[in-house]
Amino acid sequence: MSIKKSLYGNLNGKDVNAFVIENNCGTKVQLIEKGATLDKLIIKDKNGNFIDIIVGHDSLDGHVNRGDYQGVIVGQYANRIKDGKFSIDGTEYNVTCNEKGITCLHGGGEYSSAVWCGEEISENAVLFTYHSPDGTEGFPGNVDVKVTYTLTDNNDLELEYRAVSDKKTVINLTNHAYFNLNGFDSGDVLSHTVKINADRFTAIDEVSIPTGELPEVKGTPFDFTEEKTIGRDINADSLQLKNGNGYDHNFCISGFDGTLKTAAVAKADKSGITMEVKTDLPGVQLYTGNFLDGSVKGKNGVPMTQRCAFCLETQVYPDTPNHPEWPGCIYDAGEEYISHTVFSFSL
Ligand code: BGC
Image 1 (cartoon, helix red, strand yellow):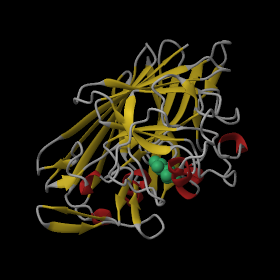
Image 2 (cartoon, rainbow, N blue to C red):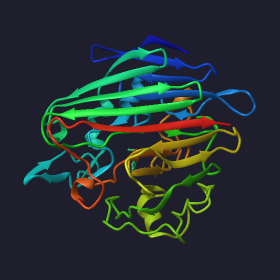
Image 3 (cartoon, rainbow, N blue to C red):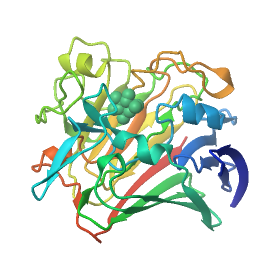
Image 4 (cartoon, helix red, strand yellow):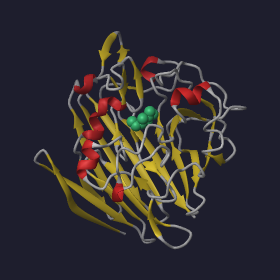
């Protein structure tokens, strides 16, 4: 186990550091302070080759100017808030509508574009901290956020999220890594198989806002209760797939009770790499890179084309601030938000 820290770049006069955690299997995870980003995950495939399974950028300029949330920590409220409005105890808050001018997406981009402060806290863990001043992007509270990435010798990458606000507020934090388990430069992910531990999903309207319905997946293209390829039903005739331009939906994790549960398992055919995602949160967003169109070049100049990657973003359901009937996202002043997500890799 070791951690190496180096200078990655400079943003507006501020140094941005990179940390590489390496375990005893030779797996390497590169994290960068901009966005507390999971930038690289280099791991051995079934042929004994080490491959990078994170689709993203290889420069700070790419992350800052051409990014689509690649690998970043997203907050203060990951995913969407309808009309950028919600109320807490009768006070209405208006947050940044950065999507089509009508929706708040990923908290307006605050946490993901910030330069966090990284620190090695053990031989295999890096802690990132960020202070979000009250009112940033319209969200209430001075919020102190801590995200710890830990890489174990079993090839588990554990993320622990903690946040405390000085005012009652909404919190929903996730990591937005784009995975291609065959390697970042290996084409589309349609042949990956995915299994999701969810009997229901969050139906969305034409601007990707939850309608409030949680339909059963059974008999629909959203049934991932048995392992199937991402590509099998992605082009099925379905209003929900049309609304999301593919899979871009929250799945309601079955048996949610706040303890760590398997949310999803993804497997790649060519590399033989399996990734299991566990979380103590109620939802996971499967996003199949629907809006990547090849116009942005990522690592090694490889264009990021539609479906060249998938994301499994653990979260509370989208737009929960406007759905008090769903598992909650409101935290009192001084009450700590804590969540855990583990990405476990095996062959
Ligand atoms: C959203 C997508 C969006 C992507 C990048 C995902 O979490 O659901 O609609 O395009 O993030 O912003």
